[in-house]
Amino acid sequence: MDELIEDSLAGTMASIWPNFESTRLGEDFVPGYVRLENDVLAVHALKPRNATLRDWNNVQQLPEAIVAATEQSGSIFFDVVGVRDKDIVGATRASTRHYRTRGAVVGFRVDELRSIKIRRMTAYFPGLTRWSGMSGATHRHEVGADGRPTSWSTTVRAAPDREAKLSAGRKLVISTHWSVTGADDDRRIFTPFSVSSMSAKPLPWHDHLWPLTTIQDLVSLAYEGFVTADGGVAELDLTNTATPRTTPKLWSSQLMQCPAGVDTPNSMNEIPMFYLENIGGINGLKRWVTLTELHGRAVGPLTSRYRIGSGAAVESRLNDVAVGIEYWVNYHKKQKTAWATPNRNKDFQPERLARHVGKPFTDFVGDPVRWAKLFWDRYGDLKHASSLQYDGYEIHLLAESGLILLACALLNRIAGSKNPSRMICEGHRNHNLGLEMRRMLGAE
Image (cartoon, rainbow, N blue to C red; front, side):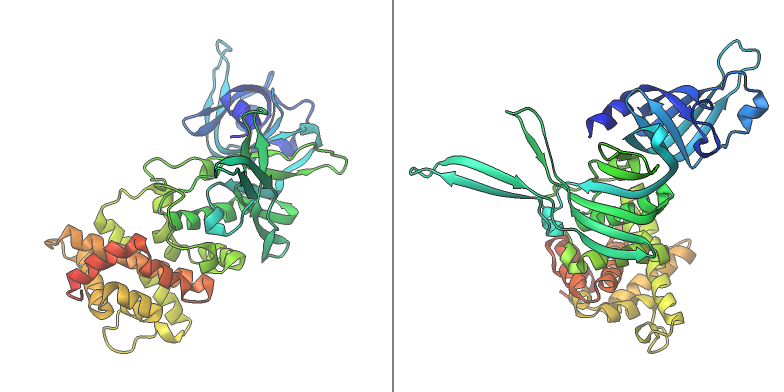
């Protein structure tokens, strides 16, 4: 974690503007205290001196963001998720307001801040050199006559930017970041994969955070665990006369803290389910962001376990996946897409989707027609047959293989090819699942 962020989250006194854009910078602040508490950034503010109870209650309940001048620097606290008041009548104790936020940008002068909007937000993801195919460092070593190494040299340089347009005035940029820290005899070289959301005009914070968390979900799917960001930066909306010496630092619990009950990857050195090149590179990432925005009901079953955990019962898991498949097929049927149109009576949605994905999934389950019928029957039984006796392991296999089918369909869509489905169905991560599914269907 960046030192400035670390010092700010450890606990600091602050002058706070809860409603920055409608107040006077030199006067309308309240004293307070800021620190990280249970993975949430707590902003504690005292009631303004000489303010009436009515004035205090008229302060916006959930502000877009809170501006503060802390002991370290200017700060913006965004992603406000809660507020609690403690009003004391009679002045026997202090009246206070307590905000809970999940994001911060620190490292600027408050008097140079024009608005709480943001022009660029960047997150750093270490361990993704192989996944992204982008490296921020090259290494050389020399060996002596005895074959033993005598020297080692490293050159760090940001990889060339790759860009894709998200919408008018907005773009997605991937590259690598580099920094060198530590004492002369204890250097740390940091060259993570970086993802940026940039806009020509300053935008609300959530317009930039959304693409970053969406891409994080995709990478987490590839590694089957929450892939944590380690730092980042943000470019703010500053006055024309502002001369920032450094780029303000970013902290977001959504990006940088693994949610409770969610697993992290066993190792970032393991082979992922798919690589960036398999899904179409930067253009595939752009299409993934768009797909998630337009078809959250299809994407949710794939990525929700990396935000809210995977502790749900297998029955709920099967229902979630089936709803995603049903939505995706029905949407395309409504669009009169040929593959989504049933060929016969009882040509259920999972069979149509399996037929569309094709050979990779056929080889994976052995008999896609029998698999689809069993999947759809169990989905219906779980909803309607209250006295149903069933095998929990069978439900687990159907849910996880359905997840594979949905992942293949969606990733094929963003890649514009069937490379993702081949990588997913033939990869080592899902080998045992496919084997067990084929055995259960008698196709092995």
